[in-house]
Image 1 (cartoon, rainbow, N blue to C red):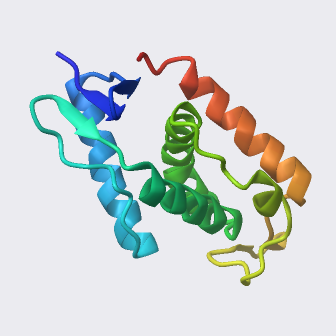
Image 2 (cartoon, rainbow, N blue to C red; image 1 turned 180 degrees about the vertical axis):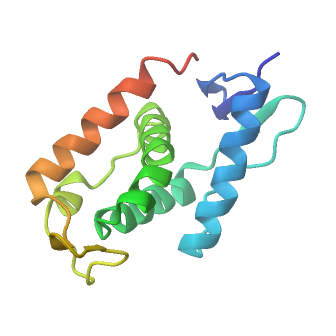
Length: 146
C-alpha cells in the first residue's frame, strides 16, 4: 500500500503507508517548532494535498531555522526531514530562497553545540552550507517515487 502527496493533480511523492505516517508526524513536530502551518493537508483516501503558498513559507522558515543551528543532535534529528521537504518543494516548483539561506543568518545562531574541547561550533560558511544542504536533498530525492 502507498499514499500520495499531491499538488492539484500532480503527484509529488508516493511513499509507503509507514513512511507517509512517519513523515506526517514529523510535519506536526516542525509545525509546532516553527509555530507555522505547512499546508500539508490530512491524508484522506490515501491522498494528501499540499497548498503551495503556505508550504513555500513553511519551507523557507524551516531552512532558515536549520541554518541557525550547529547543534549536532538537532541537526541529526532534522536533516532527513529538511532534505525530504526540499525535494517536495522542488517538485512542486517552489523557489527556495537559496541565496538568502546561503548567507549568514540575520537572527542569532540558536542551539549551538558547545564542547569542552572545541568551544562553540557554528554552521559552515554560507556557500558551503547551502551546497551541503542541496547535496543532502539529492540522495532522498532518488528514493522518493512519484
